[in-house]
Image (cartoon, rainbow, N blue to C red):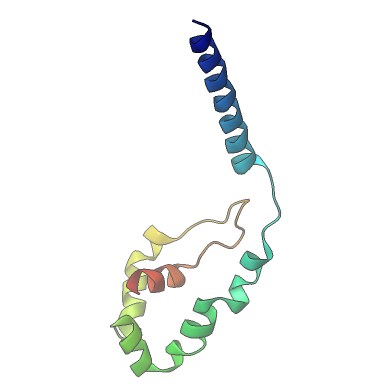
Length: 105
């Protein structure tokens, strides 16, 4: 009987720890990591896609297997469904263009 009480107490403590972890993870305001702040300037999407592929139709076709014109047509059809609103955690969510590039790749 003592073992079952001990196990019950341990389980309750574990649940309390888990609840505290979830609360801290979801509801505390932590500063955004520098890696995420610099992504808009140094990320692969910025360097590769915007910096090179959008300027070279042949490479864009080779990389994504569709033309730049078709890319923009697909984007116009899915934009409303894929767009994310900014929130407290991420002030600049991933752009619709970047999401489409990730999906195509």
